Each structure stands twice: as C-alpha cells, then as structure tokens.
Length: 107
Image (cartoon, rainbow, N blue to C red; front, top):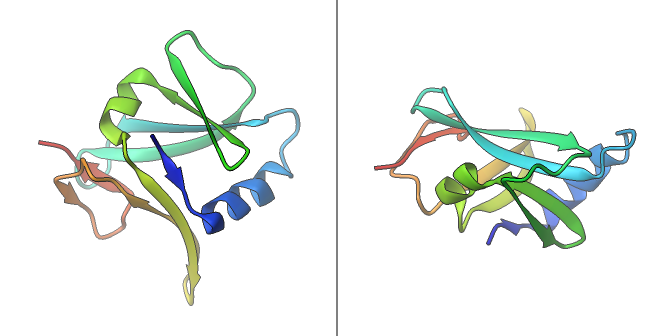
C-alpha cells in the first residue's frame, strides 16, 4: 500500500489538472541520487503489463513491480516552506536517506 496525505493529493490534483490526457500518476524508483536510489514521479496515460495500479483518494497511482518492492508502505506528503513546496517521502524500507529527501538506500 502507498499512502497519500491530503496535501499530497491536493498538489497531485493541481498539477494533474494542467496535464492533457494523462490521468495516471506514476511513481517509480530509479538508480541515482546521493544515496543510490531516487524517487521519480510523472503523469502518464499508459499502464504497462508489469505495473500495479492503486487508487488512493481518487488518484490512480501506477507503480512498476520492481519499484513497488522498494516503496511498499511509503507515505507521500506535500508541504510548503520559505524555500517553496515539495513532496516529502517517508519510506519505511529506507535504511538511509539523503538530506534532500529524494534519495535513499535499502539494505
């Protein structure tokens, strides 16, 4: 399960409203970043054969199976401060995280 906060849902819906014909919110894990892995988010209109589709507060979240294994239980939040707004990832599987909050590693 992936958990989206009310603030994250609001921001996803705001950005999604500006997209054309891309009703799916894709969440993925890719190699790179300060700690070895980083979170990637995109809006798409295609579900692939190896994707898992979850519904959270009316948002269809699409995650490939390999990424899902690395972020199952993730809490995605959104907050704003003096530096601007950003998504905040709280991954119970992450053994280390980078100060930027977007990169992590798993043992």
